[in-house]
Length: 119
Image (cartoon, rainbow, N blue to C red; front, side, top):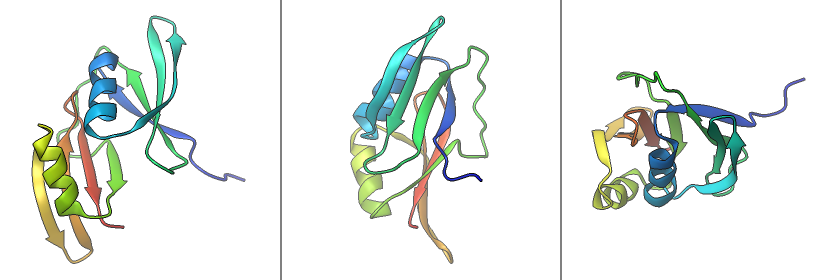
């Protein structure tokens, strides 16, 4: 029986650039960073989450412009947006309220969309 998700992969062109973005701008912590062939196996963790984010090098990566690669839960969408905007993070959509909750969509260093919102 399946128990939980161990990790999800985010395709990236440049692992060093993506690592800096996800740690310095989004505040994720490095859980594992080790050589893997001609690239690295980089697992990141958000606070107390069990699921890791793997920055998986894909030389032919083309970001999806309509579907988020990741979705995070934020305590306060507007405050998180303001904090990330001040750090120079580019947004595809500022905070927006819907009947199901509030959310915003940012672009990571590789052009992937990342959504964060209320639970």
